[in-house]
Amino acid sequence: MSKAITFVGNGKMALALAQGLCKNHTIEVIGRSIAAMERFEAQLNAPVTKTLYADADITDKTVILCVKPANLTEIAPLLQGKAQTLYSVLAGTPLSALKTLQSHYYCRAMPNLAAEVGSSMTSLVGDNEITSQAVALFDTIGSTLWLNSEKELDIATALAGSGPAYLALVAEALCDGAVREGLKRDDAMRLMRGLFEGFGHLIQTVHPAILKDNVMSPGGTTAAGYGALERANVREGCMEAIRAAHERAKKL
Image 1 (spheres, rainbow, N blue to C red):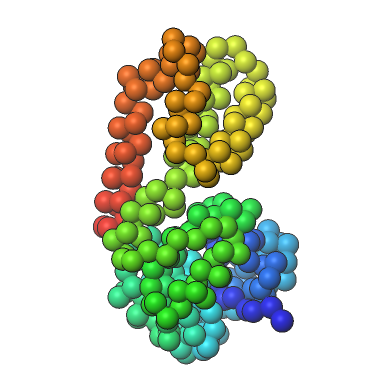
Image 2: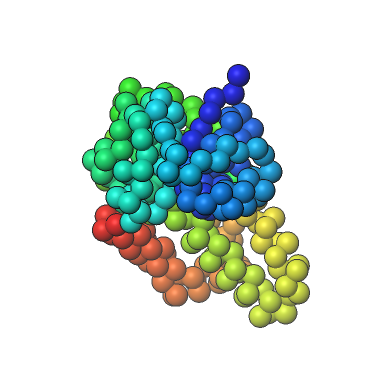
């Protein structure tokens, strides 16, 4: 028998998670409007139990909190009962703040949008009693890493949580560069997608520095392009992106 998962909120992250979890779980969504939850159900293409905040009861449920961090104080009083386990994907919202909601156990999770294709990299921190349960739940949508502190989770958010946006920028820029040199846009996009797919497999077992050295022959095209990236401070830009995202996570 499939286990029920209750989502509080019906935004993009809730949908991405539900797309990964609906294969093995029944889905309930708690939200502000039936119309919005019907759109969620249509996008999910799977049956959803729809519950308005006014009727919400989380007693003994497995709940995944997917609202905006600023809305937590507003919605917390609307959720009646005591959940079995409360998972939160709210960036920068500490476990202590989650305890305005009643639950036996608490866990912060930071998945990314690849959850919708079962390839999320999810970081977790929370009550040690539910480590195995939490890892098993989020393993259904990709890979997981249980961390030892909330500070580490905020750093992980800056890397794996925000990372798809950074890689999207790189992907777009590489395609734009190829088009500027004369390649058709469709061909550039196809090459970029093949590049990312292959690289995703290689990086699982090979250190980035070794991958780079294996491609870069003396005086070759890769060395010329790599030099241009270094002159443009791409390495420093990536490191500063992590710093900026981490600082923002701490302030939310």
